[in-house]
Amino acid sequence: MNTTTSNATRYDTAIEADPDLPTVRIVRDFDAPPDRVFRAWTDAELVVKWLGPNTTTMRIDTWEARTGGSYRYAAWRDGEEIARFYGSFHELRPNERLVQTFTYEGVPDGVCLETITFEDLGGGRTRVNALSVVDTMEGRDAMIASGMEVGVVEGYEKLDDLLAQ
Image (cartoon, rainbow, N blue to C red; front, side, top):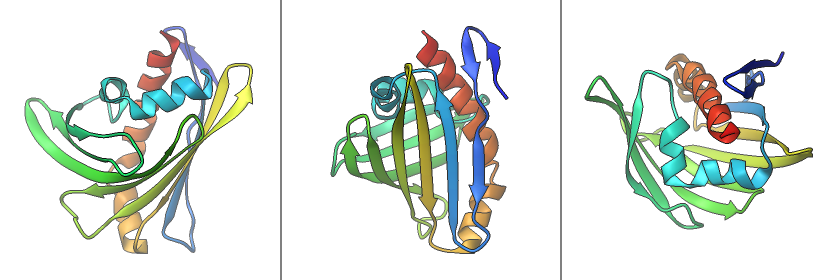
């Protein structure tokens, strides 16, 4: 189902946990070409505008979006830091693919490997396909139980608005 709000089309976000593997797959379409969507994923000035739920803001400590680079950021709510995340950029293939690790600082042994692809659908549209591989089924289930779905869906809606500008 598609809806339109503030001049941006809203597409459904598919979030699937494989019952047999410690993975989460997220698939979402955007009304922008791959170069613009990829840039929104890798440009720190854009990332802070859309990543995460509506109730938080993001503050970046480090953001080196390049193959071999790293990142560290914190989520804030009502003037208080509520979570901190960090990882490494393993591969950036412009407008096509991004491979990174993702770690919630509260669970430093729970490193997640994420592969995000940017598929050109033509007509100025892009399908983002993100696969997260978690080290254990318990870690995967904890990630889902953390409210991740709200953050992903609301973040992608903010990204819709950003890409519509």
